[in-house]
Length: 110
Image (cartoon, rainbow, N blue to C red; front, side):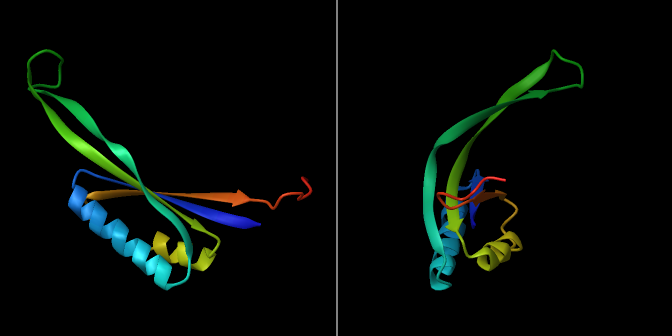
C-alpha cells in the first residue's frame, strides 16, 4: 500500500509562502522523496465585517485581505512525510496535512 501525504499551505503573505514551500520542495528532492507540486490556487479575497459592539448594527469598514494557497503531495516516503509533519512553519502560514492510503490495482478488498 502506498501512502500519499497531501500538504496544503495558506497565507496572506505571498512571499513568505513562496519561500517556505520552495525550500520544502528542495528539501524533499534532496532527501529523494517523490513530490508533486507545488500547485497554486488562484488568490482568494476575503472580507470580514467589523462591528463596534457585540450586538449587530453599528460597524466599521470591513477588513479585506487576500489568501494565497499552495499544495504539495509526497508519494510514499512515510518517514520523510512524518518529518514534514513535525516541522515548524512561520505563524503567518496555515498548514493542513492529509494522509491518503492507496491500494495497488487488483488489490483484494476486505
